[in-house]
Length: 243
Length: 254
Ligand SMILES: Nc1ncnc2c1ncn2[C@@H]1O[C@H](COP(=O)(O)OP(=O)(O)OP(=O)(O)O)[C@@H](O)[C@H]1O
Ligand SMILES: [Mg+2]
Image (cartoon, rainbow over all chains, first blue to last red; front, top):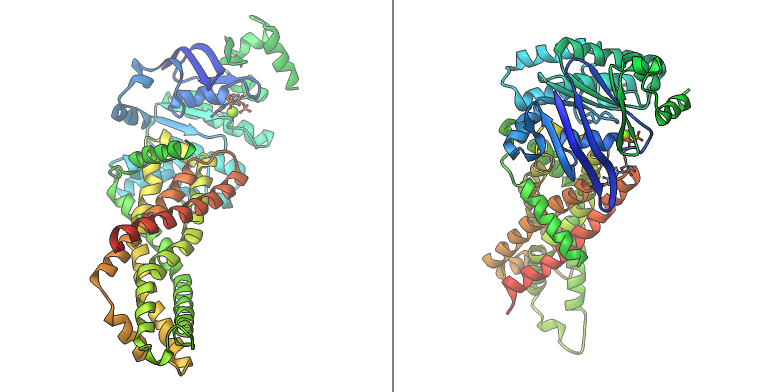
């Protein structure tokens, strides 16, 4: 479980995030939605430690990530997987080596065990016949799959996905969404997905937070949206604009 | 002011870079690959530059010292002086400085755009999220590889500069290869070797570290990656020339 308390983020004299408070539970697809520029990526980057929040706490279990000492932070990071908006695959490594990379760096597995784990992850993301290819040689959808496989290579507890559907066709988007949900449930991971794809929201949104101009404007589930409960003007506008 | 803050940032960057590698095995594997890219891939250009520069320097020096002038009767000029001039300037300046200025363009631009690309495509972030010290992971192998390979290239360049001179002697009648080599030997001092090696290591460090630094702080996209490459080369050249002067002052001031 991850809990965010009173999170503010400033860039120089511009405030991007305003007093964000929320909680993300394991085993559910947590979605962070909002318009372009609303601060979704900044929020995720603060949570994984790529950006330093100006104020507030980010609690993984009961440890505050921000005030952890360097080595503890590094240890916690091994429980975090992340899927980047542009995949961020290592382009000098093959698909197989990309997934093997975190294992080689951080696990005590033998080469055979690692190979087995890599194949297990590739199976999970349903990617075959691409082991020896380089990232430049595979399609966008395949890159996402490799990205997910690499993120789950170590036995992670937390998975962050920044726009997992960007640049994918609608059909592939649904498949990737479903994949993320399946992995979340199977391994009881705390998964946080940034998205502005309304289809994703309606498909898998069990817990949704709507960021509007850097604030946690609305929080609920997809059912609350469809049934019109807890309706909200800005959320409705955002919603309607996507159709 | 800008320069001072830039130097400050560079020092902070180096503090991150100079860390014990996470996994020695992975580190050396990457370092060997870098040694190949930095060293072996640059051999050809070093051979070309050194041989031609050696030949041209010999021809020009011979021409300057042996052509008739009112100041000094040419028949009194011993031929080995040419060898002495060519030998010393090769050792002190041509081999380390000229070679490194060329390598700044080749290796420096390459490293800056490679790391710049990793930065803008979020690969650097991916290392960080995994809990890897990204600055050290991507930069240290390049610096170590540079410190090993660039001095080797410079030593090769040294021999080839003289070899170029010998080739030039064979093409002329006014000077023999023996004159050249005898002259070069006559004035050789261990101090010159020390200067050359000092320059080699400092320039190797400048080329690899400054280009990594420039690449690591790239923001934006493909355009900025290109700019990072160009900026890195400019900075490296300026710093090489600056340190060239400092080292000359320190070791050779008479
Ligand atoms: N490193 C940074 N320095 C300064 N400002 C930044 C930085 N990163 C993001 N911002 C600003 O923060 C705001 C929010 O950006 P963010 O990337 O979080 O948007 P987003 O919600 O993820 O949008 P998108 O859906 O397009 O990805 C933007 O106005 C952006 O200009
Ligand atoms: Mg974003």
